[in-house]
Structure formats: structure tokens, C-alpha cells
Image (tube, rainbow, N blue to C red; front, side, top):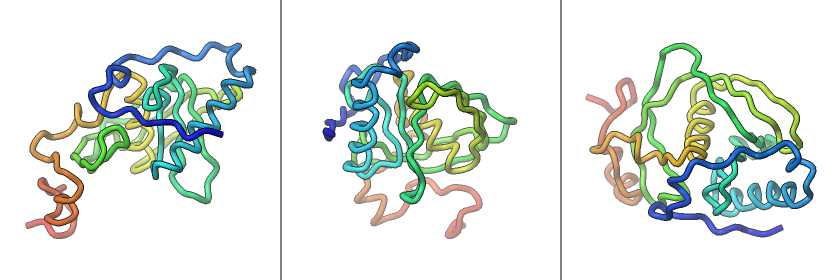
Length: 177
């Protein structure tokens, strides 16, 4: 397996819409190797998720692992549908935008349809933090970075974020006035 380099904000591949993975690609050993490399690269770079465009591959593939005890989840050609109108604010970071955080509104609950890495159809719902991670990673497939959705005054470098706290408080969070 190979650890893949992560593209950083400013690289044009991060702004392109990724191509759908055709059905015949699932049986390709090269595609399966790429999925393994994508997962290993996510772990190496301490991510919770990683999208193919972030490693210079313009295909609609993401891998997510929210807990180290869970198996990685591969979403190929994912489609997201919001469940309800509720959204929530949360701070996000990104391997392609290193050392920054920003406050982003995301749907609180989503329904996801996709294929797994072997082409088997999957359908599931995600809520809260899991919904946020799925939406963040799938945004990469459409050339969208979290900074595009972030509240501008909330953006902060990680060092300052840790030292001074979030520049914009989230309503209902402890420590607010």
C-alpha cells in the first residue's frame, strides 16, 4: 500500500467536480488498491475521512472512519438527501486546508445512497456529527471546501483556535455569555 500526498487548497483538482465511477471499475484490482491506499492515507494523515480528489484522483470516492473500532466506510458515487430542514453549526478542519478551523452550518440529518468499494448498493441515515463528516467529505466531490461554507469571521488558525478558543461561539455551547 502507498501513502498518498494530500492536495492543499489552491490546487485546481480540489475545485473540479469529480467523475462518477463506472460499474466496470469496481472489479479492477487497481481500483481496489486505490481504495486501500485512500484508507491508509487517511489514517497516516490523522483524518476521519478522505475524498479521492484530495489525493489527486478525480473520482467520486470517499472513505470515512469515525471511530477506530469501526470498519472504514467507502462511499462511491454518493448522493445525499437532507432529512428535514434542521441544520447545526460546528467547527470543521480539513487535511487540504491544514492548520485552520471554521464554523460551518450543515444539515443535522441526511440520507445517503451510494455504492461500497465493491459496487454493492448501500443506503443509510446519518445524524449529528456523522452527518457533518459525510457532508464535508462529499463536498470534495463537487469541488467545494469547508472554507467556502464557513462563516468568514469564524476562520482561525489551529494554534490560535486552541489558544484563544473559537472566534465565534456556537449558541448553546458551554462558556457562552
